[in-house]
Structure formats: C-alpha cells, structure tokens
Length: 193
Image (tube, one colour):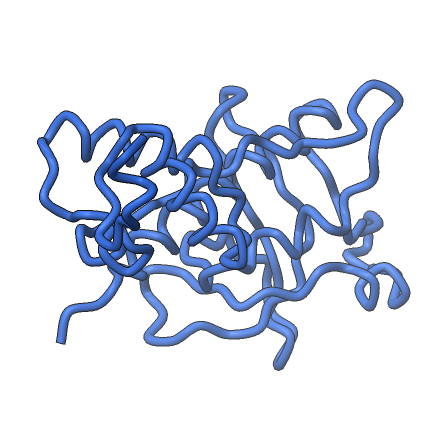
C-alpha cells in the first residue's frame, strides 16, 4: 500500500537537528562538555546524572544503546563529533556516529544559551502539500482544470495553509473561488451574474 515516505521526512528532521546542534556547539566556542574528568579519570556523579541520555551507537555495533553524552565538539568548525559512555556497563568514552531518529535534540535541550545566542532554531522544512483534483471536487468545484490553474491553486494553498487542518478546506474553497474555478453546484443566481 502506498504511504508517505516517512524515512525521508525523518532524515530531513535529523539533518535539521544536526545543523541546530552544530550551531549550539559553535555558540560555545566549538565544544561543549557535559561530564568533566579530573587528572585521575574521576568524574562527578551529579554531572553524569544531568548529562543527556540518547539512543546511539557506532557502525560496529549491532543495535543502539542508551549513552550518557560526555561532550560534543566541532572538527574544523563544521564536522560534528559526539562522545559518550554506555549507560549500562560504564566503559571508555566512545565516539558515536549513529543516532536514533529524533535523539540529537535531547543534546540541544541540555546546552545553555550564551549571551549572544539565545536560540538555534532554523526554519522548518517547507510544508508538504499534497493536493488532488478529488479535494477540489470535495469542496464543490470542478476538478477539470488546466495545469496552470492547478499549479496556481497549489501555490495559493501553500501560501495560506498553516498546518491547521480545520482551515484546509476553507482555504481550498477560497483559492478555488479566487481563481474563478467553476463551482459544481451553481445556482440559477450564480449563472445570471
């Protein structure tokens, strides 16, 4: 059965999270450390307990595991390096390169603002609008239109659609009316005008 390509959507969101994490690390001079170690290799339990925990792994691991994130750094001011320790069975710090969808944002949540950077929010991906002739017919307009009309209708819908499905149908009716698309159920009064 056909369905939305959710994998592609997850990939786009993960890429946006990666870019925002890079911006957050850049705001802190290229590295942010959650768990500090002293010269004897000891760490503070409170720091560990407050460090973000994400599902991640390395290419050599078969499955994701929960990791305490110890630090994040930028290499050459653009390549993201994330380090952590397995939550179960504390071991040596590992560089992580595989992340469960949606987990990079948990790291960003724990990075504080700086004096100059309060937000690393980027513009969300453009909304995906799937408009069909059946939708046009559903709101009472003739779905038989030119390609130019259909493209203009889609443009008008994208402009007014605000991810609130309650307004979708009203916006579609208004866009059809604005373009002069013929209503399916014209009254006698409409024909006289």
